[in-house]
Length: 384
Ligand SMILES: Cc1cc2nc3c(=O)[nH]c(=O)nc-3n(C[C@H](O)[C@H](O)[C@H](O)COP(=O)(O)OP(=O)(O)OC[C@H]3O[C@@H](n4cnc5c(N)ncnc54)[C@H](O)[C@@H]3O)c2cc1C
Image 1 (cartoon, rainbow, N blue to C red):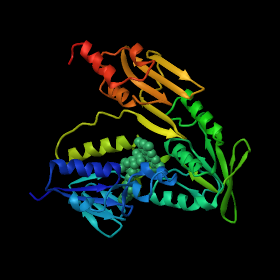
Image 2: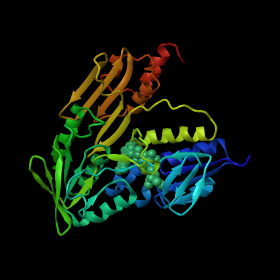
Image 3: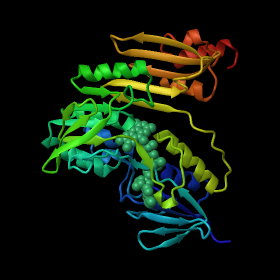
Image 4: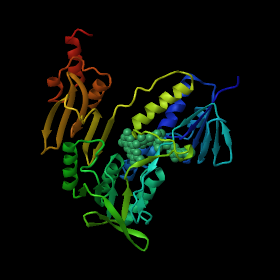
């Protein structure tokens, strides 16, 4: 039997993690990576840090240019997968190839959703998904005084942070009742909103943008459903993402669009492709970000809907500090942290491994936990 040929569509977090998982167990097989985007191999998480000038363009790169040679991968960069024929086990590519595969991994990610409102084709309106988008936004900034962001999810709120750091008068419009609806509860989100307002930003929540207005083909303002018109010469569209599955005949896909999850899924897919049966245990939500120097982390079951959970909170509105821990009995199952999260790693570990190292809710809830406390607790329980 010849060498197995693995084809991976997508050269980002999940795709490259799969390459590495395969190579760890199989040095001989053939791997081809097909990516719509040209070199370099960069991290999307860095885009807004590039826009804010915290890192340079090269700072977004996550693997160097020799990566494919080193991993002995055929990298088809700037090539799009047009369709897949699973019966014939072939992928049709934009370079004319009809590539045969033994195993195919679709790690094609997602693109920005465009809401059905007038004006989205105006100049000055950008998504923020690729390094090209980030470069376009960066290029536009010197000619702009006011910016707006539609959507205050993970991408939107980071774009807001970056634009404000670049000195633009920035507005954010979110149709849900508060910012970061999928990664923060109402208490934390309100603290973030207060922080943004205190820094001079315009925050509109619970309202939809209804129209983008322009002059000579260039955006000049965004209108919201209250009738308010917010001036902007640059607008970032961060109203959600849509999975890139058009080339798969519209197969449905469920998404947990965060980086660690992409790595996890890529690694597990890669191991299975290389013949090491590994099951996917499902994903544990974890989001960490900082908005104008206010750190926010949400881990596990941070916003339970059922009443059986015990919730312990510490809250200081003035200092913008919030700590909410969610327990199922004595077991920590979720955490929402704002302002201070030195122990987010420890809490994440406790939630993921379903152990609290014998620490009880009253130990964990009021103050930041240090590894020393954890180790002493284990020691007392005679487990070391
Ligand atoms: C601005 C921004 C900030 C973010 N910040 C965070 C953060 O702080 N924390 C966090 O956890 N997550 C963050 N994310 C999300 C994170 O980047 C994604 O979860 C991660 O990139 C997903 O990786 P992926 O490999 O699944 O897909 P993607 O990174 O989307 O990559 C998929 C690749 O496949 C290519 N592709 C698609 N279709 C085809 C085709 N037909 N043929 C060939 N190639 C194709 C795409 O062009 C793309 O290069 C952020 C995302 C953005 C945009």
